[in-house]
Image 1 (spheres, rainbow, N blue to C red):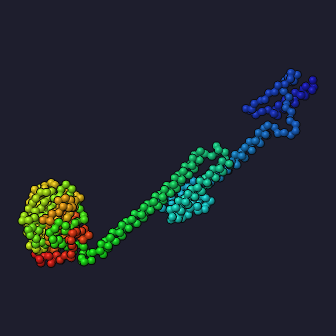
Image 2 (cartoon, rainbow, N blue to C red):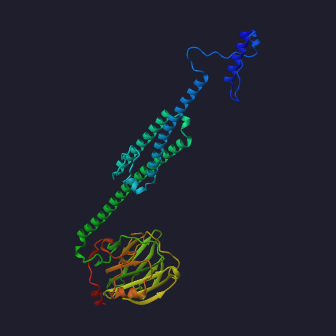
Image 3 (tube, helix red, strand yellow):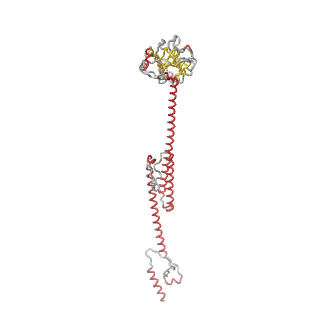
Length: 434
């Protein structure tokens, strides 16, 4: 009995010392039947061998986890600081304008070193250096990403930070590619401009050489390109002059020339213009004892001009398709007007303009009886009706007005069959001959 009472007292004392705190839970253990007579389980026996109880082991594990978390926080903080520094430098690089970007890109992006510096002026070197710099930035970001993956768990790196880095890298790459494309375009444009300038210069030089050659060949006898006359001394079907230029489509015109002839009967044909399908598109002719006639599209108007006295005379003829109105001037004075001469008929382009012969076909089939005999000079054509004052000023030598369609210049007139070019008397000398 006494041992039983002693054991009960020890159990009560142990229960008082090891009573759990409020809110704790009891752990029950099954006992054999003979032990239930005591009314309460015996206290647990401490483990042998010096091992820690579960509570101490759990506490040690918690401390280790806390130290690990603190280390990871420090690592994450340092890596975030590096990322923040890189992001700021990328932003400064992006904010650089186009001009400074090509000359003074300061990249603190790679350990404080200048990876770009002042770009060279050569576009090929600029493109190569930009490519190397872009590759360096990509390698730097890839190295940083590998370090982050090695030191921090994948879940520890925020998704938005990774996306921002990728976006920054993509933006920078696009900017560099755009700059490369711009430099390529500038290089191509510079090449094209250089080629065009070279071609333009060569064209101008060739034209100048041609002009010098023309002057050296036969123009030395003339004081200026328009101071010459064409002489047609015989009435034949093979002496004539030819204007190199042709006429555009005309709805009005003025023809002026100086001529001198004493041929009889009639001075012949000072000029004729023929086009395919119409040999008499424009003709001025005095044939036999008939008065001087103006033909347009084979329609005829007689002109009150008298110029077969062997003296120089200035003759001008105007015409407009509107109502077929025409005017005839001799020595600056209007001697006749008329209308209904080929009204509303435009002068056809692309024909042949002959001096001294009347054409029965385009450029040929001349008739000797219609040939002009004499001299002519200052044959000019305008694409409008000149004012009476302008015609008077040309005739009295107070103004020199070359034709805007056909000007009288030596290199625009060829002579054939014995027709010749000679220096012409001055305008004042021709006036004295009137």
